[in-house]
Image (tube, rainbow, N blue to C red; front, side):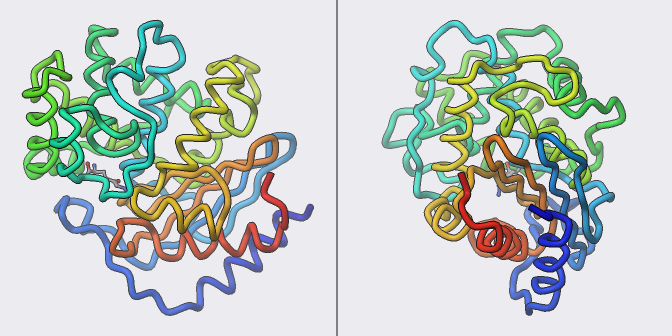
Length: 303
Ligand code: DON
């Protein structure tokens, strides 16, 4: 399979389409991004990767960090994670409070804001310096010690992320948050503010295509069965109330972020990262989704 040829051809096609999406502005600092950026990087598990466009520029990974938070918790959590949250698709917006109230502070899944906030609470219990542990973990997956968070974006969301404060207090009032709301959200905003290029993101997430083992160092992070489950959760919950669309059109496990990034995993084959900041009304990258649809149409079977 000539991935280089395929991604170049899909990129040229998608580059030309009219994009009616909008960049995320509810985090003021995110509104500064150039809406016309468009980059792609595809990293196979067993050969060199290939990129097109702005694949070498860093962007805010935002909610994509939720799969990394989940992996850090899930890799060695002994207690029953699935008592603190469920693993069902929500069919609701990423920051919705509706189900959370009805379901008494138990988030539907780890990839909506509520679920990731509970993951952060667990990490605060597990580690005395969870921000450092998280960053070190991401750097290890990426095999890249220069990965970092963006201070301005972190501060901007800390000052304006009122819906997340509401979500965290709703969970707290239902006794599913052990630590202080401010401390939990501090880690959550930090994780969302991590920046990566498409190339770095596809390398960081390559373990999900490689049955839970880091390609290169051969270190196992997730057991085969837990890795399968992380992919299953991405497939069913990674795009919130658009998870069905993404499964129907692209057919791969994936995760989006309001920075305009998407990571998608083709198990035993590759991981692919796309970045284009204009989002549809569900908060997912318009061109990112279209590009991935074309990619899997072109390559045929997805699994
Ligand atoms: O909590 C938030 O609203 C953002 N830090 C992350 C949301 C996000 O990326 C949703 N993804 N499409």
